[in-house]
Length: 124
Image (cartoon, rainbow, N blue to C red; front, side, top):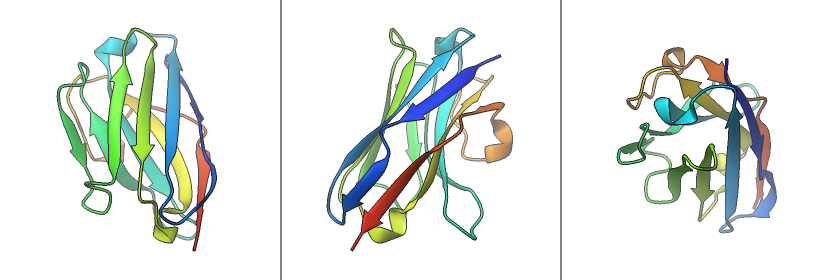
C-alpha cells in the first residue's frame, strides 16, 4: 500500500506560481513512477505530468509543457509539481498518483494509488 498526501494548492492570480507537494508513505517510494493529474468541475480527469523512478525521465501534457515542472526527492519520499505562468484554465483539483511500475505513464489507468487532491484556483 502507498499513501499519498498532496499539499500546496491555493488561490493565485493569473501569471503567478504555485508548488504542489505529494508526500508518500507505506512502500518503497523510489520503486514507483509518479504522476500528477487534474480535474476541473464537469470535466474528466486529465494527465498533467509524470516522472520515472529515478527522476531522469519526465513527460508533460502539451497544455502545461514549458510552464510546469515535475521533480522528486526520493530521500524525502516526495514528488513536486512546480507550476509557473498559471492561467485560469489551470484551475482544477490536482491529484498525485503512484504506479507500481518504474517507468512514466500518462494513462490514469496505469496508476495504482491516488491522493485526495489539492485545489488550485487561478483568478483572471
